[in-house]
Length: 237
Ligand code: C5P
Image (cartoon, rainbow, N blue to C red; front, side, top):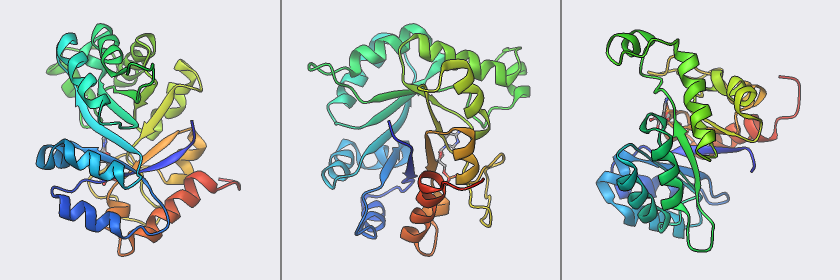
């Protein structure tokens, strides 16, 4: 497993995403396809981007009864993506079923990671609406442990939690972290952000970067800057 930058391709049409990817002449970035693009264009968009040589993180966050998740994962596995995900809140049984469905006949499968508590859910709402009384970071670590017990490869989490997830679940348990911003960039609607260098220092394995690259004047240069800071940087941070 190598550290890498994943570009969140949050576009709603095939044309927009292809125009964006056409800018990359020399490198083939790892890309994240989320619900917006998948629901707009269907599985064909995954096949087309894969055929261009990109690695794909299919971010559909499955959460349903184990049998439905197992069968859906088996369909997604045939799309030959490299990474996909689900909600840890679906229980260990659901996560185990997902792995079964995702595993191909030859024993290979895409990486499977779990969403713990969405960063948009505050501790207040967790307590009052969901009746979960533990502190939010305890809930995140507990969900991460469940994901590990179920045999998953890692979790999506805030870069601020990546170090603790590694302490709790081991250094090989993968952390995929959004909420990354350049030190001199716009924060937008993200609240708790980190720079690529800080994310590296704290132990993120993959950073998911959207607007700092997709909305940049020169997306290729912004991508290269991210790779330089997150993957190649060797100096004092
Ligand atoms: O544009 P930006 O860099 O904020 O994009 C971050 C990506 O990561 C988006 O696709 C967003 O949906 C996703 N994400 C997030 N926070 C989470 C989970 C996913 O920002 N907790």
